[in-house]
Length: 239
Image 1 (tube, rainbow, N blue to C red):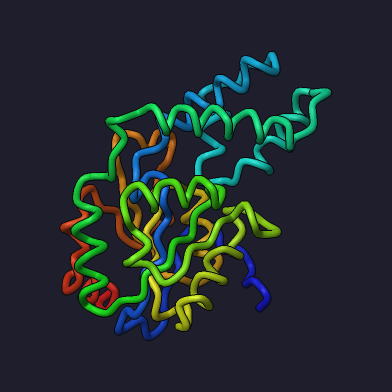
Image 2 (spheres, rainbow, N blue to C red):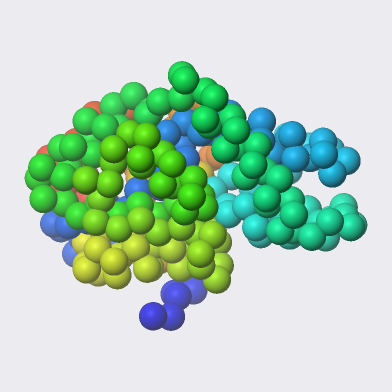
């Protein structure tokens, strides 16, 4: 399936979107608030390889897979280390932080949303830039596999968000066309990917979504109660 051309400047207009049949979930910032752990893991890696990354530059990485981020860092800073070495360092730090953080939890309200969507017969697909080992750690910890039909990692694909490949493949995994799917995202890179895939997108905005303007979202929410099943169907049908 070839990717559609990128759209710039405005949220995608979805043709004949009703009814919604599948929900394509991002993970970091939507299901779990892992950004503080990622921030610490990345900055521990930065210190190990001797680089300083500005807050603005770090914010621009949100929603992207680790390997392309590290490839850019190697190029920009002229590092002798390979990008794969940086990836391994960052993932090691994240794993250690994850396993020792007993307060790490799901974002409030998301489990209720997942359970409701599942009970209503929606197909749930995870479409995350996180590596599959990290995805599995989180899904195992919170017993989420029972609700999801498939899990896709951007780390396993040719291109990372903001490229639309992951959402195109997620819709295919769900068995529905883009017009029958909705993306739940928190990052601008993820919203760009959803727009480029031609899929209606909802942005979850939280205090941790630093540097994200969400202007490409069809709807911005601050609570998952805003998109419970009936409300979501009505939102997409009237947009």
